[in-house]
Image (cartoon, rainbow, N blue to C red; front, side):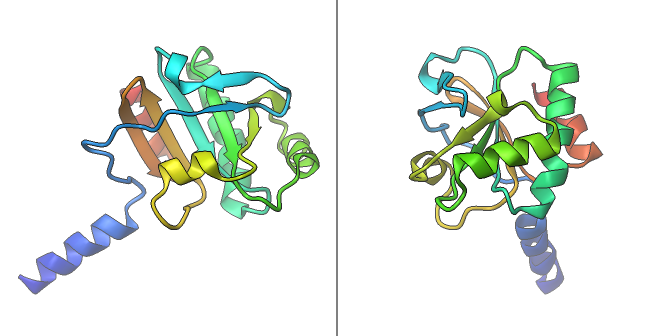
Length: 156
């Protein structure tokens, strides 16, 4: 019995999948660094958010991979890269965008962390990818790999 408890504990806390069952995604609006407004309340179709910060090493791998995947498979699905870290300036994010060769129009600055606080209870985990549609979560992953990309294909 103890062995089963340990295995369940490890699966729950080490899994790249975060539980969202029964939860309703928060409502929010935000402007991209290019000034385009995104309002989740008006979004009738799926959208994907990736929380990051400019010095996040896994994020430098995930962002170009997720951008390419979404652009290739779901170009009509909004993709938002949201930075909630106060110390990351818009200029830093712009340089980060250029370094990763991902258009700046996909990047958003959550200056006060108000949006990220709605998605995370307590400690923020980077990178985190969240897919939503209207009032439901489609998925929530920590990081990205081929298995997760296959899962996203099934859920979008």
